[in-house]
Every structure is written in structure tokens, then in C-alpha cells.
Amino acid sequence: MKIWHGMENGGLPARLKALRMFPYFFSLPPADRRPKTVDPLPVIECLRAFTVTVDRYYIDPTPHNLNEIWNKGGPTKLLALLVEAHVSSFASDDGDGRSPAKRKISQPASPKSSWSGISAAMELYMLSVLSMTDGGEPLECRLLYRILLIMKQDITQYHYYLSGEQGRLGQSIWFWKVFVGALALAKSQYHHRVLGMKCVDCPGKKKMEKLYEWFCDRARAWSIATGMTKWLDVEAVLVSVTWPVALPRGENDHAASTWDTIITRYTQTRYRP
Image (cartoon, rainbow, N blue to C red; front, top):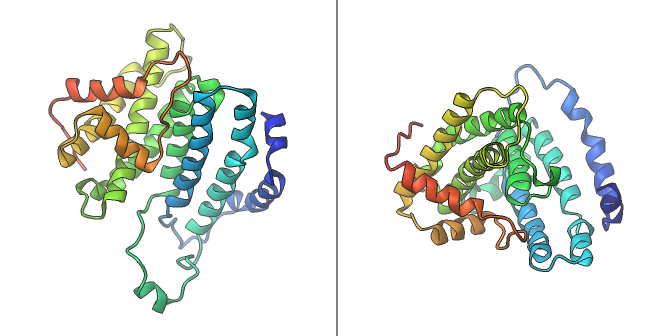
């Protein structure tokens, strides 16, 4: 991975820019200031571009296409975007760089997210969907559990996107987070149950299963709200946010099977905001 990062076109300046902002992670924000919502679209658009290069490699797994994943600078751009979003979440103004007059005549507000929520979703997407971090192996259970709790808080905070009244894009991003969380848990269960992987200091089987049911309930609530039950329709919504169209050779379609489980096993939603 170090060699690939060294190949990135313009990667070094972007990494240095992100590193200059790292002190913001360790300095305490003003006592009277709470983190604000952030615009998740820059991160999602960067993930979408990165996904395209990953798709090329999965379709044609040549060394050239593998190098292109890193040559395009996707991981470094994501790092810079996440750091910039974290800084802006504690900024004293709205950080959009526009005057009040221009904001009044601008387009409708883009979907919002907590910084921790979009960061957690990005991490699990890179790992559980694209299989591009940690060799595609599931996270250690305690870490996975913690990341999913962060996502749960974010999904609950922005549950109003479920109705679609705030726009189709916001609804789709909300569901994308939900499904990424459900898929991460499903793949973790598969590795431990089917492949016999052992977990050290697991937070507890019941806790993980309860969390899995929570994510499945939210996915089912989205299915009821949109009327979508077929995987091909659901996949099209995920692709509209960011989702691969190809799978690594020899890998099962965990996403399709996870959706099938959600529809067949959870026939009644117990959704609570």
C-alpha cells in the first residue's frame, strides 16, 4: 500500500494539506460550540469516482487497473475531504463561502449528515462493499460494534429523510448508510459462522444480533416507504449514491443475499425514530 500511495498523481501535496489540518483533531473546540452538520456529497462523489476505478479492476483484474485505483488519488482525496469536513463542522460560520443574498436564491439545501456518521459509513463502505481495506477481512468485533453505534446515532438523528419529503437524494443517502451497516454486520456474521473465524473480546453475540436487527428494521422501513422490494430496484438506488457494479471474482453477492434476508425474515417493521 505504501508503494501504491507513492504512485499517486499529486498524492503528496494532498496528503501534506490534510496533515496540516490534523492539529484540529487534537485541539479542543470552544466550550460553547457544538459540531454542526456537514455536506456528505463531496465525500460521496469522491467515493463514487473511486468505485469506478475499483469496478474496472474487478472486471479486468490486471496490474495496470490495480495501479490505477491508487494513481487516481482516491484514498488521499478522501483523507483530505474528511479532514476538511471535520474542520468545517466546528467553524464559526456556515462555511459555504457565499453571501446571505446568494444563499437566498441558491438551490435547495443538499442532504446533511454528522461528520462521524459519514466517516463511519465511508469506512464500512471501503471495507465491506469494495473490499479495499484490511484485505476485505471483517473488522475486529469491538471496533465494528463501535463504528455501527456511531452510524446508528447518525441514522436516528436524520430519520426524517426516510419519508422522502426532504428530497429523493437525502432519502437515498439515508438508506445507503443503513444498508452499508446491515451488510457489514451480515459479512461479519458470515466470516465467523461459515468460515470459522474467531472473535476475541466480542461485545456479545446478542448485542451484535440486536444491532443487526435494528439495521434490518430500518431497511425494511425504507422498503415500505418507497414500495421497493426487488434487489435490482434497490441496487439501482444504491448505485445512484455510490455502489459497485462488479464483484471480485469468486466472491458471493453478499449484498443481494442480505437484502433477501431483510425482505423475507423481517416482514414487519418495528421502526422507531
